[in-house]
Image (cartoon, rainbow, N blue to C red; front, side, top):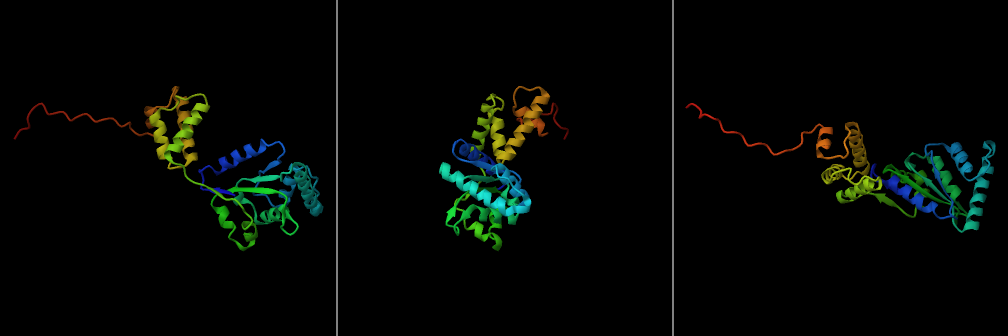
Length: 237
C-alpha cells in the first residue's frame, strides 16, 4: 500500500513501480483504471484485461474463470498476477471486499494475485472500519510518501530541465526560489515552473531568470535602494 499527502509523489512512485514490474517478461501486471466503479463494472474491466468472457447473469462463472486464469498464470510463470489500483481511497467497500475474496483460496492459506493500493491519507483510515478490517490485516507492505526536502526538489527540477534538453532554461536563483517556496510539495513546484515556462514563451524569452520570475508574480524585483539625497539648501530655522 502506498499512501501520502497530495503532491508528495505517491502516484509517481506507483508509476515507477509499474514501469519496473512490466519490464519482467513473465510477470502479468494490469492497472485498474476506474476505481470509483461498482462491482459490476469492476468485474467487466478485470475480466476484459485478463481475457476472460463475462456474462453478467452468471457472475459466479466470471469469478471462477478469473481465479482459474490467475492460477494458470502463476503455474506457468511462477509469478502471481499483479493489479495496480491508483486513487484507491475512492474504491467502494464492496469492490475492496471482492478483491480480498478473489485474491486468496484454500481458506486464506494461498494467495493467487497481488494487489497494490495507492491513495491519499484517507485510504489507511478506511481500514479501521469493521467491514474492512479483514483486508487491512492482510496488507504486508506499507509505504508513506512524505514531503521532499529543498535540496531534493532542486535535484528533481535540474534533472527535469536537463532531460528536456534545456539545462540552462532556469537560472540557479530561480531554481532555488521554486524549491524553497514549494514547501516540500513536488506538484506545486512543477506547476509553478510550468506557468513560468508558458510566460517565458509568451514573452519570447530564451530563459527564465529572476526578472521574468518577479514580473510574472507581480513582485518588484528587490534592488538596493539609493541613498537619500541631501537637500541642496539648509532648512530655514
